[in-house]
Length: 157
Image 1 (spheres, rainbow, N blue to C red):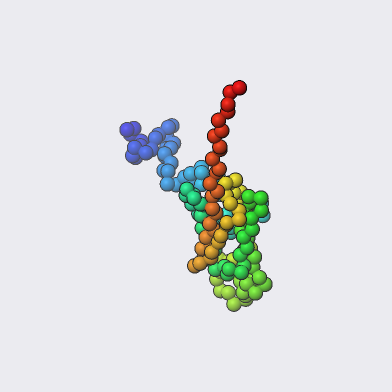
Image 2 (spheres, one colour):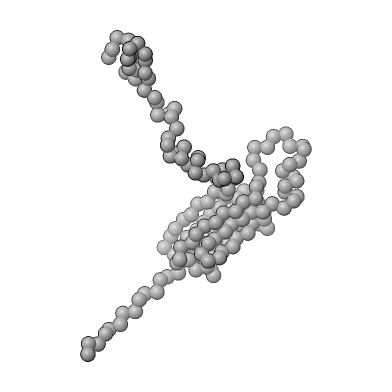
């Protein structure tokens, strides 16, 4: 250890001290990249879109979408050509309530949203079901069992 150093984390070079940066003070690169790529072009961020958990099992895929504060009639789910679209549209009454002059502090608000998901080819689009309970939209996507290719014996002439 040098005579000008206070502890092992400092290094002396020409009377200028250089301190090793602590990991807790620096932002990990993946956090920085995620914050950049999760921002859409309109200036919104991922926090304005509902968060989704997707669980894959042998027979189906389950999607749990966090939609606290939404009413069932404000949510639409559509599927077209293996693209599942979930949308939430606020009616005029909900928009007026959110912009009321009596609000002293507003830390969250409901905003219209639209999310799309590309579905795997083995999803049966006719059997998709959904239910909404306690702010969680649950969508069940049933997998089709792939047909086993027929084994055909070829006679040799």
